[in-house]
Length: 211
Ligand code: 3PG
Image (cartoon, rainbow, N blue to C red):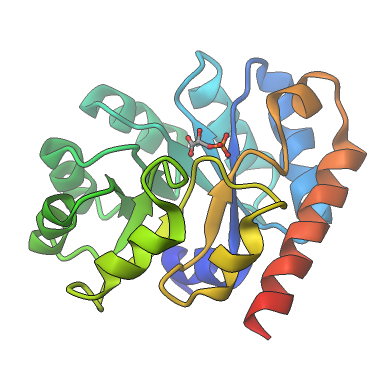
């Protein structure tokens, strides 16, 4: 199964910000216990690289992506750490081309037709739609799907259990991303039971929406 197939099967992609590498493996295990076997560890903290490496080594059932990859240097670090897919908030041609050269699946961030067309030029057809709620949410995704029926989206940004159901229900979306399943606060306080509960609830929402 490809990384994109795993993402689609899981239905949710938790966006994880880790300040402390020691929290990485317990967070991954908590997500897994709730039925979430995909996670995005973001390059917003100095702990990202080591956290990715730790989860790849200790939790082999988890598909680990590197998020917020905005430079070639971060991409090199993510690849060295063993990241199995790459997510970026935007569409940088250098990052996209380098991922393809490394055979690393990449979900570049898009909000406009031009950004989607850049990705299509590189043979990509799954995009992070970020920040989703600020850029018109599902309404914009449906409008973009008109000229780009081959493209699928991972909406992220401002989505939580309160508004995820409609995103889950729409087949334009391959999955839905966000931090609500494992917030910075939950990770900091070691609320792993809470992470497992929110993960299980999110998976149930996804399954209910897709029938
Ligand atoms: C991301 O990087 O994808 C977002 O920061 C996650 O957005 P959220 O915190 O609003 O879920």
